[in-house]
Image (cartoon, rainbow, N blue to C red; front, side, top):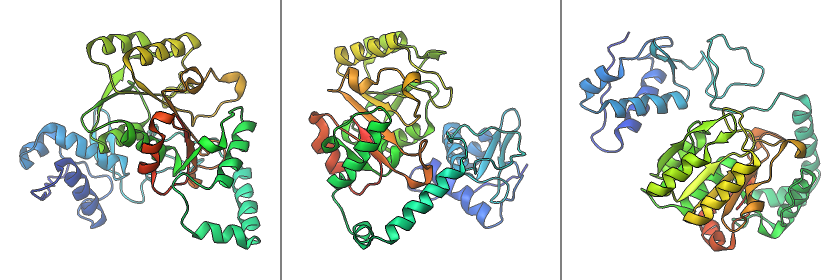
Length: 336
């Protein structure tokens, strides 16, 4: 175990400074692959910070791919060559760990082939190439949104092209939703086991996250009701079909009960639909049960290609203008 103790700058978030110091030390060879970092309490005492700060700093460095935590053993330097932060589908992994931070579609050669054909087609159409290098409206060109709406319709999601907003992937859509609807310090609720990207977006927006108990049927909506009776969150994030990472899906009764609570306590619903399922395996979307308060995020990642970063959104009229102000440049889709 190394006795490494970094020098942290006096200003800025301490956990973030620790994460950056870890990255710098690894890149500079001060920390090498396989080294064990000091226990969190020991490093906290050496730095004069709380254990929570060190825990958060280690977690951020692990999220970026620099470290790996082993239960009952400690936190180790992963190293640039030991394992990539974003694993390649089908790549061998001999660490004995299963990374649940990413939800990857099954590898299929048709994805790369289809992308190649699309790019070749663009290269033969100067108009498309010119449009690709020009600035565009924050919510995307209407022509683009019509193409997306037509494709969504083939997947069983009929959404008006005029209401679709293009974002830079599902993660960008989630971040925009939080920035539009919540202020720093406000609360949101999510499954106790939820998408790590939601947690990261909430931290960046300085929001408080309440984890709601769940079972094989997904979120325990009655547990959410008890929370609402004490202090209702401003927004509830949920993946009704195939929760990441558990795979649980909300049954119809819980979906309707969730909508009842949202209306009773005036709560926004952020519905993440990136885990695409065939129509027969899906439940009723929340955006159909409560269109006035649901933001539906859907991206191409799990259907076409994660690297293309496309997603779409249709906000309710009550927050559409705020969304457009917050969205800036884009490349993905969502629906509210």
